[in-house]
Length: 560
Image (cartoon, rainbow, N blue to C red; front, side, top):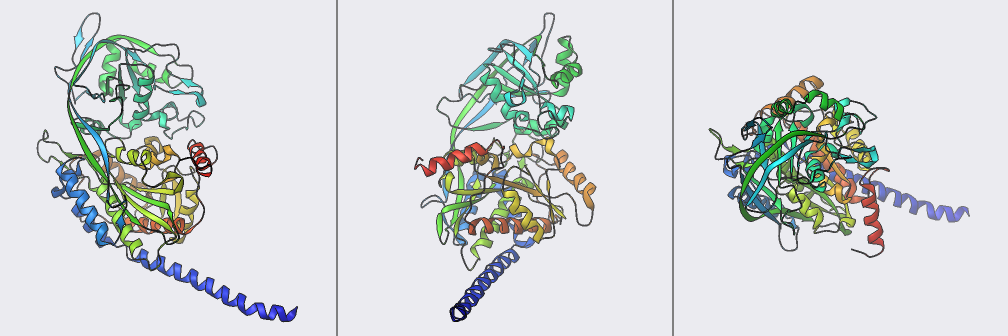
């Protein structure tokens, strides 16, 4: 027996040394790739993508042509393969609607009429692909938050028939309004608080028109963002029913206009707002009528997702996705002065980060076991359209997609002691973040502003809805030198002054060292996922877990 052990021991030692050296080689390979991510390279790409030459990177414009050509060339120069067969592009069929309000809105009472000012007091559009839609003396009904949520025992449409009528709704949800942690998700916005849900639910209820009341706090952005985002050309995916299932008219009222309308209706806005946040609220007819005719200029177009692939060395049919949206708001010729929405922070930074990660992975001496897909998606600003199209028309099966890692607005403020996970606690991907952050000497924290609903506002959400675990990191807020209050001030200033404005331009004075830290962390996470064998899932009880589980069941049964 002793002789047998003596014979085996040297083999075990050799095998152990081989594994140890292999780990060392892998760690050194990763460290070398991380070191290759630099402020200089990142800054150069941001400056190019956010330059006036790219004309605000609007979908289906000359700005898009320049952007996707630049990305294709960068990916090709790195030696990455086309990610969609022989092409670097996935076409995204779009319809572009430019809506004109005609003679404008008229609000009718029994005694008087009033005409709110377009853009200053309201914005309105239609997603229906038709030449013209109208509301003709449609009854206005206040439906509180416009939510039907059985799991919260909440139904703002209970006892009211809004078919053919126009609903008026508050933004966000009752949890935020009350700060009651036992109501919805407390201060953290749920999907029920998002304007996208509210318009969807209004259409399901048969409403002809739907308006959300804007207030900066619960919305998470000022009126200027609404005015710049929802006027001018609006894009949507091409659908079989030409969006005729949508409300005829969708839009926003300013808070001031809403208050004035409630006065005309002999209702107290603040009282009804408070009632709407309590269980058992019932919709209130406002005894007002609205008339509005919208005319559409319709243009069919195609935008493009850009895909580049680093094939895996072993399980190349399994894919880890890094993504960022390349688009912004383009040019608005109606504006005085600067008309180009350069979108430097949003999202030239994320797109440049995607290129940095692609370069880092291409420099690895040993390719990861799984494939890495670098996905630059189109038309995020128009409602996550490019990512939604990919997630519903995947090039690589979603059941073989390990995770999607999203970048939307990198850190321009400098190094942080922490890193933020938007939607922390949602999935097993958090474990990868915690481990990678610890190696940087950083801590992981949840969203610092959960009331703004960031989890539902970027491209990872398109994958989450289909069941794929998706990670959205943001820079932390505890600045190494200046602390948390200073960082919050910088972020609030950006939201108030530059978010979705022409003033979101590249500034050479930005401190991108924190962005480099975050990219190195993301590289570590993706590297571990790509060399692992497990498929992370959503946390138990999470709303997306059932879709992931069903995806795996279909895959095991051989069902596409």
